[in-house]
Amino acid sequence: MIHHDPNESIGLHCNLTNKMFVAAMERMLQGTNVSPVQFKALIQLMSHGPMSQKSLSDILSITSATGVRLFDRMERDGWLTRQPDPEDGRVNILVPTQKAGIIWDELEHLGIELIQNSVVGIDPEELNTTKRVLAKVRKNLELIR
Image (cartoon, rainbow, N blue to C red; front, side, top):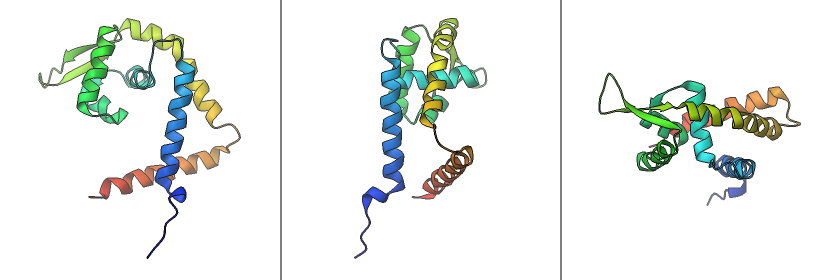
């Protein structure tokens, strides 16, 4: 029987790192009325512009149903509008509002600080290697059925 130490798993290390990012983001966002997932959605919309609900849900790694609830709240709070895709009226395009731009102007520095603080003491080449390795891991995982 092959024994594998679960504490050596790349999956465990990725999961623990992600949880630490989310916990740090929650602390950083205290008092802003913006949740970590809303912050991540704003990052994408403000960086890449309007996109479909499905695309943003996929980027955020959330289900379509969870995305609908998230985007409902963000629309209710005035951070985005839904517009029909001119090429496919069944598809909703999420468009950041002027209010989202104002919120983003106030919060963008927090995200930059989080990333900068998370890589203190890490050689830039090590960081680039880590990104390349994780991209390969993701590609390998896509192939698993």
